[in-house]
Amino acid sequence: MGSTINSLRMLAIDDDDLVSSFIVSLCEEEGWRVEEAENGLQAIEMVRNNSEKYQIALLDYRMPGPSGLEVLPELLKYGQDLAVIMMSGYAEVETAVEAMKNGAFDLIQKPIEPEVLVTRIEKTIEQRQLRIEHRQYVSCIEKRVAERSSELEAARKATIFGLARLVESRDSETGFHRERMADYVITLALALRKMGLYRDI
Image (cartoon, rainbow, N blue to C red; front, top):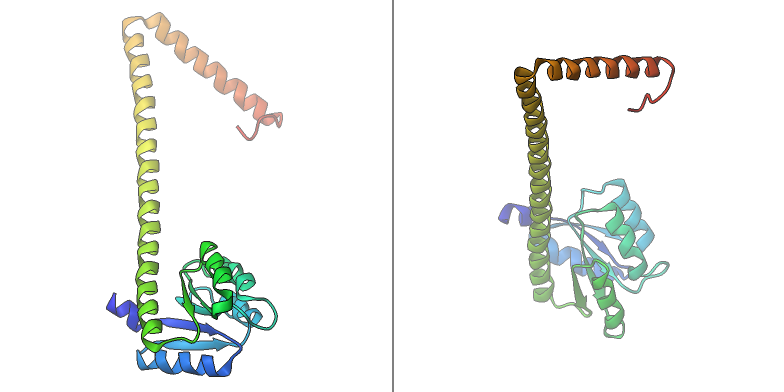
């Protein structure tokens, strides 16, 4: 986890230069790299052009143009593993909480306290890592289930074939009938394919 935090790349999205400068200065003291976007449209473009570059985005709710609430889904659309922390003044707390319901990781109220910001970022990067690990675990389980299902299907077919062979060994006429029917089906299928019928099956 330490290496993940130390290599953290962040995007600060705020039209207030003083807030952006404060975030950059504080994060750089922690060894984190921060880039700035002065509005939501610029931030969306930055994430869209490099979806894996940023791990965390600090997103202000009230900005010129699209609000943070409008920008949030666009950021999440292009940055699958992007963890967004909303920043809001007291007047917009309820709206920012709504943003959290729509995918934001956390909410920080302005004015921002340095210790609070650092703690929230550390907590968010840990939660983000857990989310990634959970998704990878689920994907691994789904893959193993698919492989097991394939093995079971192969075993089922082998059982059917084995039973057919058993019948054939006990009753040659039944076995020969089975082989003749298989030959007829193959011949008919090939003829239909030449006629352009049922090519998809």
